[in-house]
Length: 204
Image (tube, rainbow, N blue to C red; front, side, top):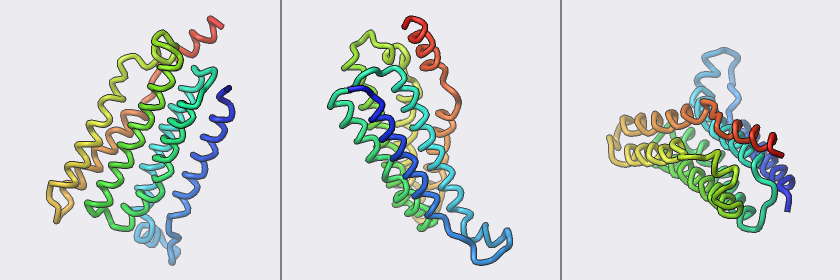
């Protein structure tokens, strides 16, 4: 089976996720900038963080499937698992926003990020196993340092929100910093897959 239907379906789901998240933003009752900050300030920040994460997954998913010619059932189910985790972003983002960054919603948000990272890794692994150890994707992934470091930051953030200063916001601040750091790591362009795509197209 070719990848076109899988990619089209995934793009549609990600577009809906972003749309749902932006609809969670509250419209200010007044007409001043201060009204915007009061009603939507925190919501805009949490929306921005989650939007960046969805964008990162869309970007990586798009590049990855440039190196995939055909998919089988295992890839379809692994892709659905990733979309399930990403589809929870509007819920976990809204809960974190509504609670004003209480520890438990922040922990759940961190678990959502961790779950999405694991699901992406599983999808990537299933594709490589179907293509074989000498596949173009395997060469593009390489040592995957960012992929290995990201779960460590997620776990550090989750544990910080759980055990540090539960009555205050020190642990939550550390957790959010960990989540932002991972986003920054992945926003920085990664040329590995682009390079392998060019090589693959030249060989083709």
